[in-house]
Image 1: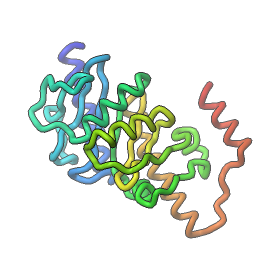
Image 2: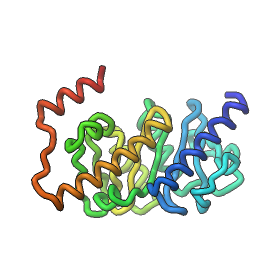
Image 3: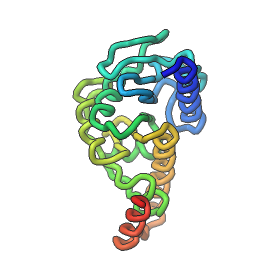
Image 4: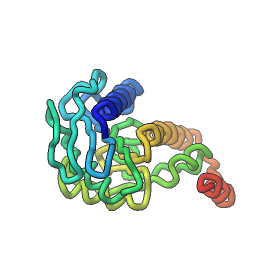
Length: 212
């Protein structure tokens, strides 16, 4: 890949991190994003950096084995998590880890988010899964989440946050945003009562539509 292409990808990665922060989907110090730009090259956001002011020059480059090729700053503490997911999911190229408050509340409560309340959520998210707790930044966490990612594109990390994967950065980001909206609807309908999710036949139709 040419240097100009790498620079463009770094700009896009930094843009989506700033956007994630400005949308209130993560905190200043929390969350991380990565992009696989070739079979053996990964771009990833750094650790301990103001997410709202992320620049393309802050983005690190490493290979699939975790060897740093270039980085001016310390890489994200969840770098191992990203690499483990890429190894488990050769079909995806982007990972977004964030702490959207409503969705993360469900993860903290160890409760599922019912995506069948909204047709858009069902279409974009499918069925998110809850992964068991492990210490942030740990090898154990990376293995648990990577294994869960084989079954879903959206993972609620118990007592931690959310991971969404996609073929593109936009797809992964969209899944975080749609999940947060769906989590809000779940919470509000619990207050209102008598939520009316899609029936099984309607879910089947949506799932078939997405596979076309």
